[in-house]
Image 1: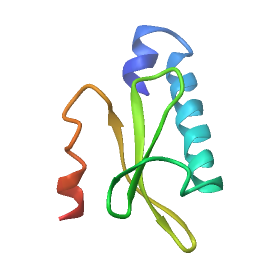
Image 2 (image 1 turned 90 degrees about the horizontal axis):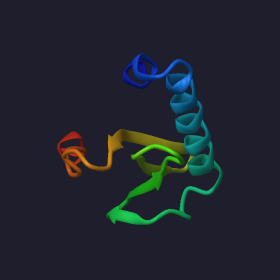
Image 3 (image 1 turned 45 degrees about the vertical axis):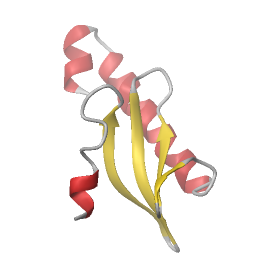
Length: 81
């Protein structure tokens, strides 16, 4: 968020808003997004090159990471070990 805000006033807030909206989509429809691995899914953030990596749970979702789609795309796997 800070990086975007430094580059353009208001863009950091736009990024935060899009991430929030994306998380809400994942909460509303946790099984609608593509599986990356067993029990792990990814939903893409609108307007920004990010994805939310999450695991559906009975009581919601567990967010593994907010990943940049062009940098170390598999870094999140280390978080599950």
